[in-house]
Image (tube, rainbow, N blue to C red; front, top):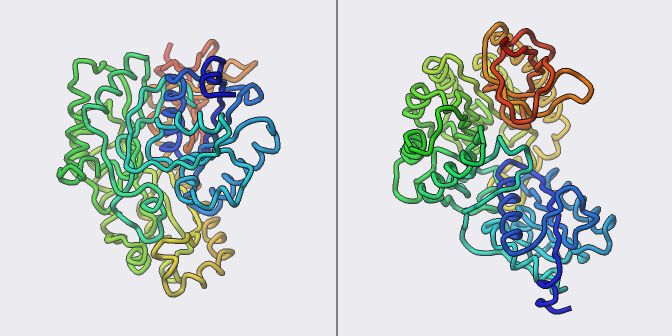
Length: 455
């Protein structure tokens, strides 16, 4: 069948997204691009799709394994469909994937998601394309979202210049590329007109926005946010949540802007990763436990309702018993609201993978997993205590999912980022996904809060 024949008939596609919020944005851009090219999106029905795109993650070994298993499963479950590997794994191993999984019908990198139409058509024609575009193209006109359409992710930059020695992101994404401020502002205005209430800004480091254009660290982000808040298109009430700010270059001026306008939520995701100087230096980071703890205290001193989420990476080369104990001391002092813990994996191509002791650290994976479990156990009562401080207070809650057969629904408030934190159980009939309900927090059950709408 010729390309013209394909265009004459309905071309259908399905997208399965794996990985982080930034991947999700790329998947949504691919969907928008294919729909603009005349394809029909079948989000709930892969059986009816001619083309299945698996948007992969390739950051750590477990994500790579999940991606490969998902691709193999797609070919096995849908033998008559064309299956294309897209995203980070496809970008990182574009040359190897066709040999590793010869059944694949195409490989597409992650730096220009809107160009997926070139791969999609070639795959449908049976050409088995391998396409890894150079540079970055980050624009989007998204109408379909993987979550509900009142809470979306907005990617303002891609790539990273920090080059942390354990991290494969620069290998996958390349150096920092910021979107033009006017593009971000136009997208925000469009999303607000569509009825979006919560916009979760994402990048490898939000504060690096504009560095590639010669702006100082933090200035580009602050200027962008100020322009959005002052825009005629801006509404009186919406949320901007800032996800991922590197702790070594945290812009203190950002706190003043956040304190001046409640539409920027007092929620900060700052991946400290560790606290012991020997480990931080091996990670390629310049901070220390005192600087990081002082940053948390300054945030909370400026923003009384501040919520700080972070991640720790245990088992990295250089982490002995003393360094691990220092990390525990930092955890106790910082009293982080939310914490994710990961065990280091030796990623081919990273500087840390070549370090003396990297192989020994890899062999000590069971010890790293034990430390991960211990930190998570210690964190539980810390998080619960932080949650208790919200009991009795009034707050806005965005409803995510009514509970079928019950007069209640699951929602989130300012302390909850999508997909990674707990929930609020709102007890009331008739709640609908996307509602924003002013409520009183009445109690806590584990790491979930209970609430009742104001009468």
